[in-house]
Image (tube, rainbow, N blue to C red; front, side, top):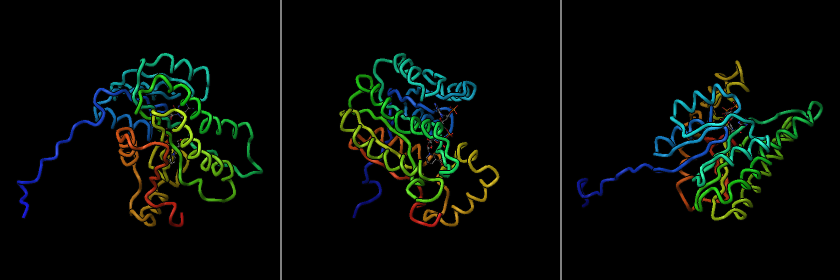
Length: 253
Ligand SMILES: NC(=O)c1ccc[n+]([C@@H]2O[C@H](COP(=O)([O-])OP(=O)(O)OC[C@H]3O[C@@H](n4cnc5c(N)ncnc54)[C@H](OP(=O)(O)O)[C@@H]3O)[C@@H](O)[C@H]2O)c1
C-alpha cells in the first residue's frame, strides 16, 4: 500500500520565467487577464490597445515592460510596433475587437471589411511580423469564438470568419514553424465586451447560462487566461483550435 508520505511532493515552478509575452488588445478583458496570469507566472509583458488611458492603467497595474497605444488594424502602426519590440520575444497573443452582427439588409460593407481586417488580416500580418522575432517554440495565439458556428439572420459575417479562422491558423502553423500558432474559440466570457454588447440584459444572460450550460456556471476570464498560458507553455500544441465555452455550443443558447 502506498502511504501519503511516500508520494512525491509536487513543486510548482513559474511557467514563464523570464519570458516576454506581447498582448495585442491587452488593456481589458481576456487579453488583460492573460497578461496578469503571465506576469504571475514570471513573464514580462508588453501591452497594446487603442485607448491610451485604459492602456496606461493596465500597464501600470502589471508593471509592463512597455505599452503602445495604436489600432492594430493600421498596417503602418503595426509595423512600427513590431519594429520597436525587443529582438526576441516568446509569445504574442492577439485579442482585439468584438464581432459585427448585422442582418444582410443592414450590413455596412465598409464595417464588414474592417471586421475581416480585424479578425483575419491581422492574424496574417502578425504571423509575417513574428518570423525572426518570436523564438522557435514560442507561440502566436489568436481569439475566435464558438457562437459563429450557429446559423441565423445577422450571423453571415461571423459565420464566415468563424469557419475561416481555424483553417488560417492551422496553415500559418505550418508556414511559420517552429513558431507555434493556435486559436482559442470562446463562448460567452464575462468581459467588458460582453457587458457592452448585452447592456441591461447582462445579468439575465448570466442567469440563463448558469441554468443551461453543462458546467452550471459562466465561463470567466481566469478560465480563458489559464488556457492561454497552458498553450504558451505546452510545446506539443500547434495548428489547433481550443474550444472553451462550457458546452454552450452543445445546448440551446
Ligand atoms: N467576451 C466574449 O464573450 C468573447 C467570446 C468569444 C470571442 N471573443 C473574442 O475575444 C476577443 C477579446 O474579447 P474581450 O471580451 O476580452 O474584449 P474586450 O474586453 O473588449 O477587450 C478587448 C481588448 O482589445 C483592445 N482592442 C480592441 N480593438 C482593438 C484594435 N483594433 N487594436 C488594438 N487593440 C484593440 C481593447 O482596447 P481598446 O478598445 O482600447 O482598443 C481591449 O484591450 C475579441 O476578439 C472577441 O471577439 C470574446
